[in-house]
Image (cartoon, rainbow, N blue to C red; front, side):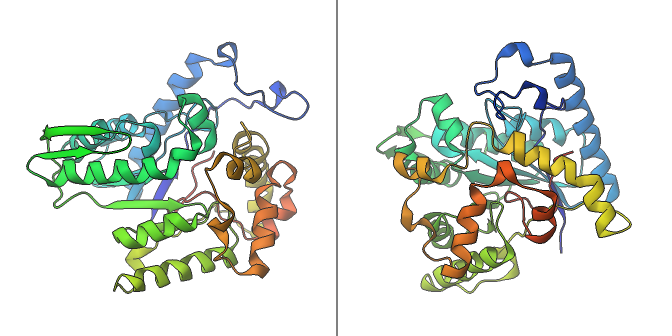
Length: 341
């Protein structure tokens, strides 16, 4: 077994005092941002990642989020580049670049650079992102799936072909050969986190890409996701192996379960009540209305598990310590260890 850390790198100042009617305002204006805290925050996390290598961790994961104190890695590639100069052995997992809102050729080039900077330590994860980010970047949520899959095709071509051309619905290129190229051939490993989407599971199985199942999912829902993924792999003549599934868990070590809950529980509640809910990212009705998600996205989940899962997605603001203790929740697609302080 390999153990990775996953770091959201949230803004370090407690922000509940800014709430209006129980909600952190969105967008959150510039006047609430303290550059000195950001500078020290980045330095502390770089120090922590270097220490993780000394302690024997196998890798560290970086994520991409925008316009929120929820996560301060607007560019996970920049953070991985910084970490590459403080580490020598650990894998650097980009988990992940948000394909639909970015220019894919630029991503292919940056990731190739990272693989060279790290001498082949890159694991490249790709995500669709969350609705808040589409709104900020002016990208139609209804185009999310098509943009994701087209961007992936372009990145594959850029990494693998001597020279490539592509004429798509969103991007077109003629006679392109990127420099540098990835160290790892035929390409760097690619993983994908799956919040719930049936289509993402099917895409991952078709491309033979490992998944991290479960955005705040119960263990029962994760079992359903893995089972469906195994069925999809079989349709393509593949058998699921341990290397196909990257399991995530929130981990806090204490003398007892009670002590762990007492010490870490308030921070988890702050994460769910204030940071995770910022911008109303878990509103399933809104996601379906925009075309970002369809009702069939979760019909593979067993009926007895589906209702609890859907109600949990709407219940982050009212979550209690008892919920954390009893519901066996697993936080957002995080390999090994969740990074909220």
